[in-house]
Image 1 (tube, rainbow, N blue to C red):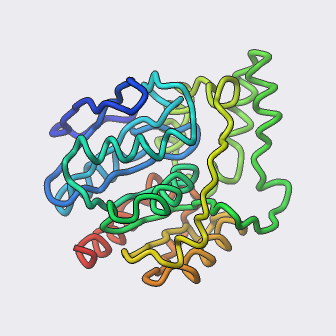
Image 2: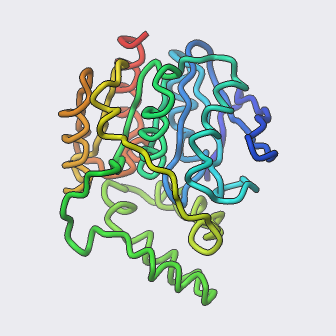
Length: 273
């Protein structure tokens, strides 16, 4: 069961297209704005909302097409969504944390709005313009998932995605499995079935090489080879970057190995401030 901390506050932020999104916030201090991964939602950051509230104001929300969000999926709009949320919080610059697909958004945001960042934290993030080879078993079969959802075969989609290396590596107990199933049950597949194709161009690699703020990549030891290679590439490009690996963890290390993960972030946030 995913339960928000008792002291969580909830507010609304207006997005650029007229829609709103809920913000879940814990703690005080500089803002740590967190972008969740594909098929997940704000609840994937419950361990950070409860564990890092002593060093930062931790803020989570549901990205377009996920969780409780009613905004139409559109990856290009998400960059400005982040800017709108930061403006609503009145707290720029912020620490920005992006997990998996949320990391792609965070990198694109950094390339467009570097002045709004205090630091950039990336977990299993893809990097636009860098595509290391990966075995078929590690690839995400989006077309198959789209077909399953279009046919109404939600159970098969959920079973296959929950068995994927990105979702299963490092998951150690039934409570963690239940948390993932609970979030996945809220995923409606809007981005696959109705989402707007990305048309914007982001020169992320070039901008990353000039990024002035500190960059931290956090990976689980059991992360896929391609994501580990991508993290190394990010560290090689960004002037003030470092990489930390969490033993025994996989792609979802913030959720499955929260104590170790939070300790890493606490050191980073304290040093960056």
